[in-house]
Image (cartoon, rainbow, N blue to C red; front, side, top):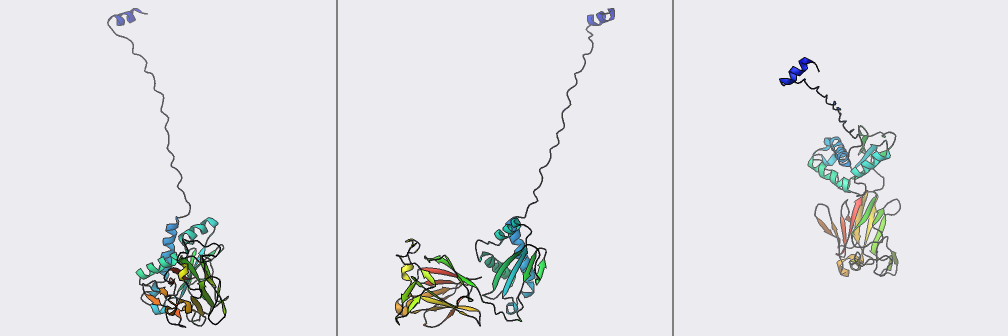
Length: 292
């Protein structure tokens, strides 16, 4: 140590200590997660479908006399996944629900379609057919009312209350124009003729009968009612057969979607059916009528 250093130490002067450099902090850049670019949720697609149909039907606002009698919604889907989303949007597993929602929203926009108007939808994988209206991958087919529609009107019956042999029955005029409704598969009428029922309510001794579901089946006659189809008018009607009339101590009613009700109590008279009607048999069994 030099003389100068000794003097500095004597008077308390110490050499400055070297500053230890702090290690540089690594800069971390937070990368944002990629945003999913998948298909829109089914609810968004449902709103889009409803808006599309309503917008194209605006010319019929306050014009119920000229409103379409049928609508066919056409959807072009590139993938099966896309088609599945649209099926959820259309409530494919709940027949009639999308049509009912469409009726409600059309009414909010002063558009009223005929009571028995038909609604259908079809998926296409390549391209849309010639449509009345188009918007992107959506198309809407509206039949020309100047040409008479002679195609048969398809319908179905769905169990609401009671136990039928099938939960749903299809009505196809190309196959039959008259459908007998009653308890059991067959019965002998007063004239001696054997009647075979097409719409069967189970007897308590039939295979598959459930005592809880079929508790009210016994109130239904073996020859209760008949549904007939008029091809010229493209109209289904309900007739109460002898077993379903008050004279036999029974009753048959039709509850309409607008809250009104018809009693089918006149022999041989046909009571027109419209989409959404509920047929009551014997005061215990309810069957929903739907146009498809």
